[in-house]
Image (cartoon, rainbow, N blue to C red; front, side, top):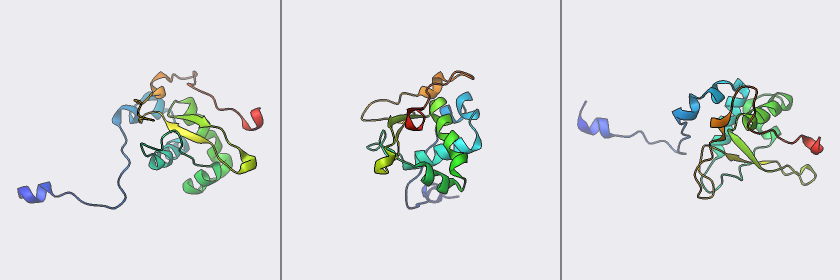
Length: 136
């Protein structure tokens, strides 16, 4: 293979979603259900540096993207928050049809370093718990 062939990069439209091995190989990530892992990939796909903390993916849209029911995906949001991969930054306002907003903890947010809450997760000790609908 020539030097030119080795240096050629395959160009694809739309960019990419990077998964750091540090969190990908972590105990916290390995403990996630398949649904939660897929949901994290969808949320991470929406991530952009200027948008972290304001990432919005409703339960209905998340379920549609994963081809599962809303009943199946709801616990995946809880799981991701409990394992420290996402943090709730704004609660839902269902009367105004506005979904929750999230921050991906392993990426920079508003110029600050990642908080990496997933590092603190231990089995049986959630990093965070999400408020239930209606404050229950």
